[in-house]
Length: 285
Ligand code: SF4
Image (tube, rainbow, N blue to C red; front, side, top):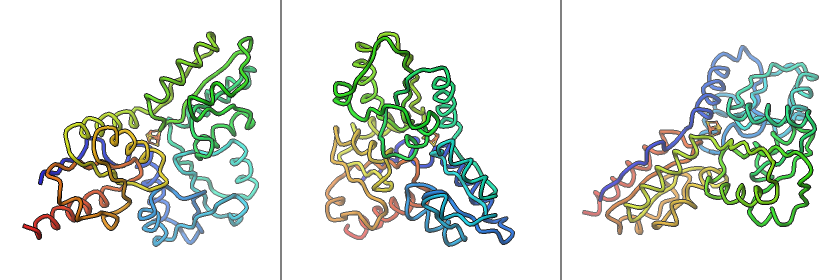
């Protein structure tokens, strides 16, 4: 059995930065209660590790104690959330990924100039909800190609278009093409993060040369699900959170296995999975 790990599997720059900032603050809490606004990342196992160090998760600003510390995760939040937090007199550790901050700034600036904002992405994803909060929640959101036909567009208006950082690049290309036909003067900001493209491309390449690919990452993680989608076009694909989700019977039937992982998957979960597969295979020989 040959196991190959895709290039760029696991934590991206923005997630690593946020996790490091949170860990550092937890080690230096000085007795303060430390919250993250929503789970720090879409990975239950990693979140549990941080909770064991004292991190609490607040689902909304209302759950945050006055005078505590609040970590804003890499997805970022709406502008109004900063005001709400400040009114509670909390210390803010802003771990918004700089690439997401850049989108928030584009949206805020163009909205102030009177442009209509379109966000291409999942309307329920926290990054998209946060970005929308930088233009008064007035953006139109396009999730799929079909949405372009169903929305009212006014070609006399100026439009600014931004994209969720983890959007599938092929999916976005077809949406941009269709929008360009309807809005020839719109300004398109392709804000898909290169970490996402690199990871998708490396995983796609690997999926072309193996029989099975295992995609490791939170079942609710949007970028991990997209990786699984890209790989499944080429080979049998399994999306798991940890080694415990593996169907080892099936896995031992393949001779070439690829492993990739979403941006929120810690290295230790990848290593644990590889060792588990190797061990199971050895025991069967
Ligand atoms: S995927 Fe890109 S934009 Fe998103 S957190 Fe990672 S580095 Fe930042």
